[in-house]
Length: 335
Image (cartoon, rainbow, N blue to C red; front, side, top):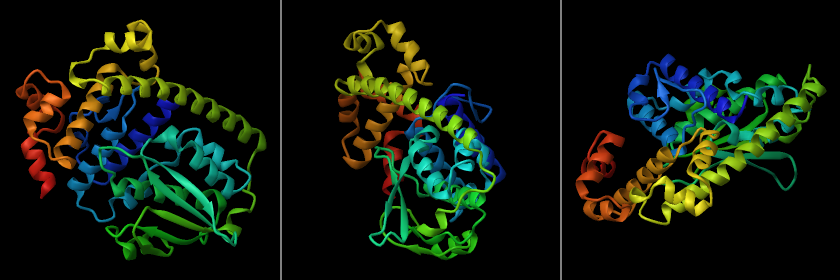
């Protein structure tokens, strides 16, 4: 098992949850690389922009005010891969929560839990901080992660009264969430935040195995190291592409800048479930959306800035990505 396998488990479990919820999964993955029969192919990754696009489509299709909560209830704990046995055999629920924070990136790059203690040490705050990206965050995606985390901690600890308060953004229905999660939920500005009673997280987990805990922990740490090394290469490739007009750059130029043969670059990217073409297209999509929506740049000027030979080439690429023209996309997102 490697981090790509865990990503695949998580995404395919998510697709199963979407299907159980009655969503058209074929429509959700349309145009997204790496999918076959609505499942992510082995050894493929799903970049942040694509994952968020998946959730935005699901929200638009479902019109469910608690979509994230319902999907969080439906996802299988086994889809977290090695993180599940680590949590189950951790010394306590508090330690398991720290591992969830530390190894979150093995599952998804959407964000990460940030854990802090109150000044009096009575409470532990677990804030989900989204990863910065040109593709906007989807609150239901985060709600599903928060819901799944809470359910996992309850499962391994056998306790239901650990949460003092769950703070959710204003656009999430706090009253319905409280009823479904059986805990206090309040709206406030900022990020999703779970506030735990610290004393409820220190009890030993019944039936844990110290040997299995350390085996799985060492395995996960090795996967994190491998993923960080791969992300360093991917980050460098993105940096090189972004330093010129992205549409015009090719892999030979990037390989020369890295001081590597193109086949070495291709092989190393493939080990991370990535490819030069997919990285380049993902960057072009992000830049195009940012210029189109946030900066409100003229469409012909966007094509020029991104390095397309002519505006019509940009228009064709954009319609392939989003199934609408740049002008239609701007109108839809301005409404």
